[in-house]
Image (cartoon, rainbow, N blue to C red; front, side, top):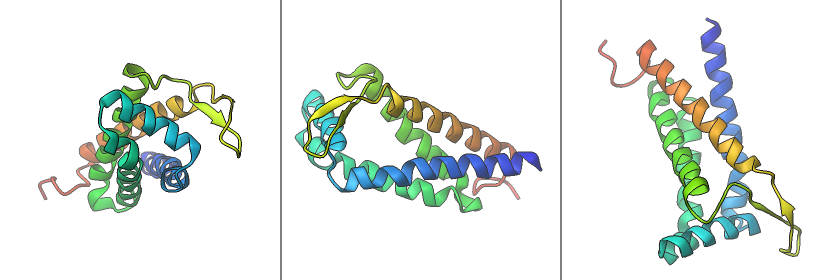
Length: 146
């Protein structure tokens, strides 16, 4: 029974992080321009710099909804883990790096986030994996034999 409440708490945390980040992804915030601009330049795919934030934001929104529907929670956790594994990869293995710049209202860099975005990606990834494992073990998913 305790696991049930912990699972809902983990799903709530994942959804909170994803939903609060939608403002940045859909408003073309300076932080978003920086992240996806660096990744677009690094990858050579300008379309990723221009539209990647929208795709990631939509995936995060879908995962957030799926996490609260028991029959598809496993898929939502898998989607969340997949999105965050991409974020972790890009932080570690591209010029993006772990420390993201912080911007003022005029778009000037005023410091860095101390790695907070990367840390949150790691925490969300871990939470999503835990939820997925518990869902699989409990058989609360579309793939379970009933």
